[in-house]
Length: 339
Image (cartoon, rainbow, N blue to C red; front, side):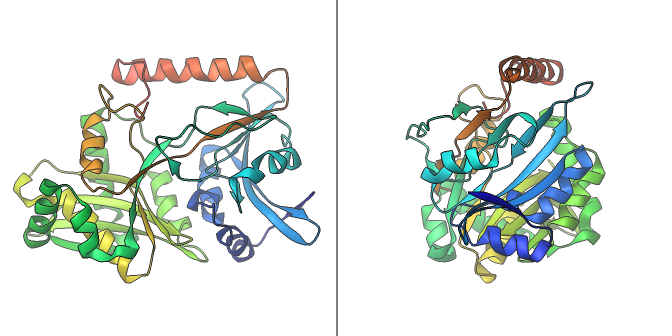
């Protein structure tokens, strides 16, 4: 196998979206977003003869004070089948990193054990390891029938009691105000404002889009979500809501607006993005209850690492300790939000 670097946004997105196992986080725009956090994207096709068997956007970042780098393919690589991962990983190598972290968006049934692969070690995912996928091909009525009864009632109430609008960058201040308010209530970490502005801007790209869904009551924005769409799927990445007018069911209105938009645009899957692996006692237990009400399929995204240096074990240990310390400092609990 050989690697072929791609440096054109449209050509890259066309290549990535052609694989059945793929993700918006492997698109060109996401690599540009991550530059703001100090990552450098490298985009390569893994070629076997004249055929591309995988596409990998690998993000590289040097460890402070060392010559070593971290190499990470967010929700990647894009693959034809998950069983190709070991040989694709060997072809990719470590890009000069201590290890290569891989997490292809296979969407495996949550109850199954992730497959083991020779030469790869199972790892904690960096992106949420579990999610709920809604099948948009069944249409709005099918989606409503699949919801829990209370959610179905609230969805219909929200559509009557709120005005829902799909908007772009002009509505960003409204979104960000609600997003910050929610994160303060829930004691969740967030990036700087510029990061989310970059998501909304950069993910509007060849073969992909980003948009805001907002739910209003009497002209007041009560709930807002930032969504990205790519390769037939809509991802709910970030959202927030006000505690004003709870009777309006604004968060449901915001989601129903995004779902209707996705249906109009012909998308096939609606990804609610992140739910806890163990909901009971999780900091995100309330988030899980809300998302679970939509029904859908609970899926998991296994993560693997290809060690490429003897520093792999100490570096992974230090990174885990750092994450635990941050959890304790911010929330007083060592568990990850979606752990």
